[in-house]
Amino acid sequence: MNLKVLTIAATVLAIAIIATLFMQKGNYVGQAKTAYETSTKRTYDNALYKVGAVNDVIQKNTLLWKLACDAQKDGKTPKAFATLEQKIGTGVFLKPETRTDTLTGFRTRKVAWNSDYYIVASFDKKTEQLKGIDVSALLGKAAAEESAVEEEPEAEEEATE
Amino acid sequence: MDELNTEASQEDPVLTAKKAAKMKILLVVNIVVIVGLLVIMFAMKSGYAEQAKVAVSTQTRTYTDGVQQVSFEQDRFVEEWSMLWDLVFQTLSATDPSEAAFKNNLSALETAYNADPQKQELWKKWGDEKFAFSVSSENGVYQVKCGADCSVSFTFVKGTLKNSDYSALASLDVSSKFVVDAPKPFKFAE
Image 1 (cartoon, chains in turn orange, red):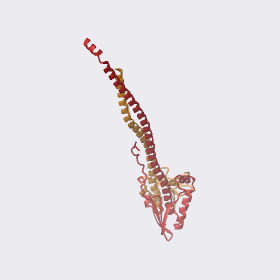
Image 2: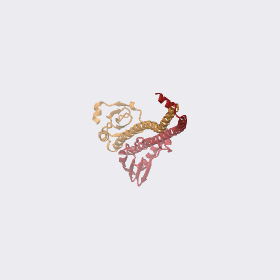
Image 3: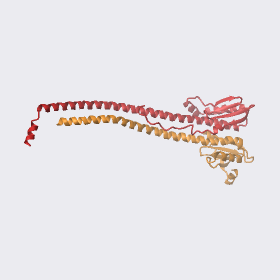
């Protein structure tokens, strides 16, 4: 009788092992899939963020570059420059900062879409002519002479626009 | 009741012994099969583990390399694109609109850029000795490129700048140029 029970138990065990044999591949596939998906998802999310952010910088800096280049042809006065600025960067550019450079006496107009990327156009106050545009921030070489400029009174700023 | 007990006790001993022998053979066969199956199971287990490891690492690396390639191309493009915009800007704001001044300006920009040790390192990492504008010229028309769909043309007539066309550069859509694809579904058999 004991022998009979043992034989039945051994048969059941053999069937169970056969079932495990077939199931273990699925188990490994599942584990490998999870490992792959976890790892690639992290890479994907990081790259999506980084590449997307750089694309965004390129698109928005393109507007600043275009403004700087177009201004060399059609934005020689503060008014013409402001018109170009409106035409090119409405909805992207922040409110321009108009100041007076204490060193040169030029009126400067800083156009930016964030604190890192901007151009600064300088105009002669008397002749109202474009004297130059500083694009160094677009090349990653932002000038550090911010302290050399002072805030322009609000009324004067409005008049420029 | 007594009759039943008598029948049981009277079971043929030879038949009982034969049954027991069959059971023994079946048990031995079962044990052999179980051992065989266990051996196969462990062999396959290590095979699957190795296959899974290789499949995960190969496919993850393939994906990571693809993503890094996009990032690399984008980083390189940003450098070339910035320099091209700078060239356009410097050319348009130059007081001397001559072709000679343009050429000087072009090489001065390259020299200034390549003098930066950080940039030198960057281009070496990318497998190039240094940065150089991709310029082609014909009859006073200079085409400066930064990729297949990114170019600027400068037209000189009698040695003086007449036109600079940077519309392609200004209208470039990089969101479709640099795209990170989602990972492909995992394949165990690879």
